[in-house]
Length: 432
Ligand SMILES: *[C@@H]1O[C@H](CO)[C@@H](O)[C@H](O)[C@H]1NC(C)=O
Ligand SMILES: *[C@@H]1O[C@H](CO)[C@@H](O)[C@H](O)[C@H]1NC(C)=O
Ligand SMILES: *[C@@H]1O[C@H](CO)[C@@H](O)[C@H](O)[C@H]1NC(C)=O
Ligand SMILES: *[C@@H]1O[C@H](CO)[C@@H](O)[C@H](O)[C@H]1NC(C)=O
Image 1 (cartoon, helix red, strand yellow):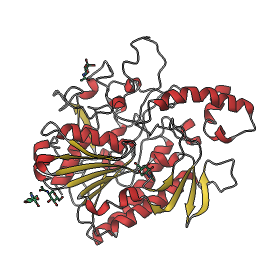
Image 2 (cartoon, rainbow, N blue to C red; image 1 turned 90 degrees about the vertical axis):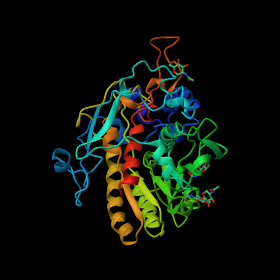
Image 3 (cartoon, protein in one colour; image 1 turned 135 degrees about the vertical axis):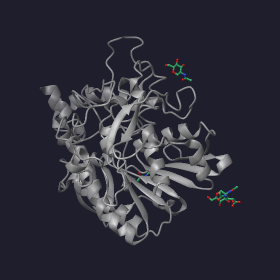
Image 4 (tube, rainbow, N blue to C red; image 1 turned 45 degrees about the vertical axis):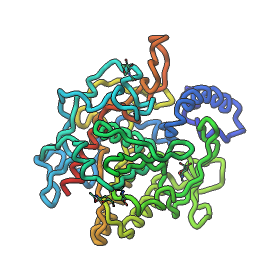
C-alpha cells in the first residue's frame, strides 16, 4: 500500500520537502532508478510517464480512430476513399525466412535493443511479417531503395523510437553497402550517415518534443526539474535543416507526458504536473495539441518539395505493472486483435495525432506539400512480443536465474517487428 503510494508519487515528490517519508521512499526508488538510468543514458528516453493515467492504464478498449474506424478494421478489403489499399490495416502472419540482418552482420544496433546478443532465448518473435488485408506488401528491397535514393537525403526526427527505427533501416541498407558515420553531436543523439556509392545520407535528429525546450537532467539523466516547453516556438534542431532533406519522418508523443511548465510568448501559461508551483494545470493533451498544430502549420506552409511522413507514436506493453513497478513483457508471439487496448495515455496521444494530422492533411494538399500519415501505432500494438524486456541488458540472468530486472517494454528488439515499418515505408515511397 505504502509502496504503491510512493510509486504513484515518484516524480512529483522530488520537489516535496514536507514529507520525510515520501522523500525516503523516493531515495530508495532512486537507487533503482539510478540503475535504470545509468544504462539509459545513450537511450535517454526512459519510459517515464508522470501521469495519474498510467496507474490505472492497462487494458482499455481497443483504439477507435477516425481513420481506422470499426467498419474499416472489420470490413474487407479495407480501402480508402480513393480505392487504395490501406496498408496499415492487416495482420501479422507467420514468416519462415530469417531476418535480413542479425547481431553478427549489423554493427549499428544499440546495445539496449540488441536482444540477440543480450541472450534473449526465444526467436519466434523474428518470424512474422505484416500483411495488409487489401493488398500485398512487398518486402523492403535495400538495393532498389539505395538505387532510387542517389543524391537524396532522409531524416528521422523525434525521440528514441526514431533512433530505434533508423538503426533498423541502416542495418537493412548496410547489407548492400555499409553506412559511414559522418556526423554526431556530443551526446550521440543527433547523427548522420552516408552510403558513399549512392551519395545517400540519412540523419537522425534528436527533438523529442519538436518544440523549443529546456530539459533539466543531472549527469545520470534523472530529471531535476520540470521541462520548460515553449508551445509556440519550434525546435531549431530540426527546423534549421528542414529544407535540406528530401524525405522526413517526424514523430513525437511520450515526452509530452513528462512534468513540464508551458510557455507562450515567453510567459508561463501553465504546466503539467507541477503541484509545488502556483501554475494552472493544463495537461499534456493541451500541450501536444498546440505543438503538433504548430508543427503542421510549419510543414504545410513550407513549400517543401519532398515527402514528409508523420509517424504516429508507438504503444508500450508493460503488463502487471509499469516500468518502475515490476511491469514486464514476456510474450513470445503477437497479440490477437483487440487483446491489447491502448493505455489511456497512448489513446490521448493518438487522438491528438490523428486530429491534427487530418486538419493538416487538407492544407498540405492545397499547398502541394506531400504529407503522409505513417500510422504504425495499431500494428505495433499487436506486437507485445517485440520488446527487449529484461534483455536490454547483456545476459541479465547469467548470474542469477531469478534476478530482478527492469524491463524495457517500449523500445523494440533489432532485428524485430519495426523492421516491417520499412516495408511499409518502401511501399509509400514507391506507390504514391
Ligand atoms: C550474437 O549473438 C549470439 C547469441 O547470443 C552470440 O553468441 C554472439 O556472440 C553475438 N555476436 C556478436 C558479434 O555480438
Ligand atoms: C551528392 O548529392 C548532393 C545533393 O544531395 C549533390 O549536391 C552533390 O553534388 C552530390 N555529390 C556527388 C559527388 O554526386
Ligand atoms: C547525382 O549528383 C551528381 C553530381 O551533381 C550528378 O552528376 C548525378 O547525375 C546525380 N545522380 C542522380 C541520379 O541524380
Ligand atoms: C537539440 O539537440 C541537442 C543535441 O542533440 C540536445 O541536447 C537538445 O536537447 C535538443 N533540443 C531540444 C529542444 O530537444
